[in-house]
Length: 64
Image 1 (spheres, rainbow, N blue to C red):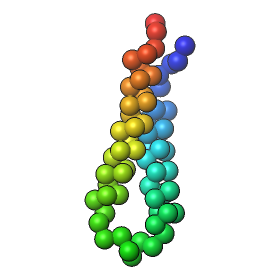
Image 2: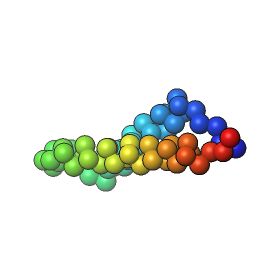
Image 3: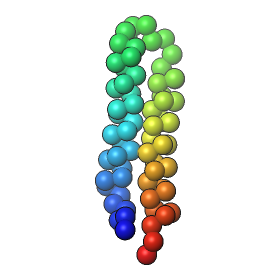
């Protein structure tokens, strides 16, 4: 049975968001060429939302 742990799930959300951003940096790698940082903010928000959805599914599907 899965035991939900808030700190670990929060850490996972932060890790996924950070890795998504880091991968985008590796792909773009020319920070001067980035003119619209809003797209980066949206990507970061999407990564956090995805990780939060995984945590929510873990809570909703646990039995006990």
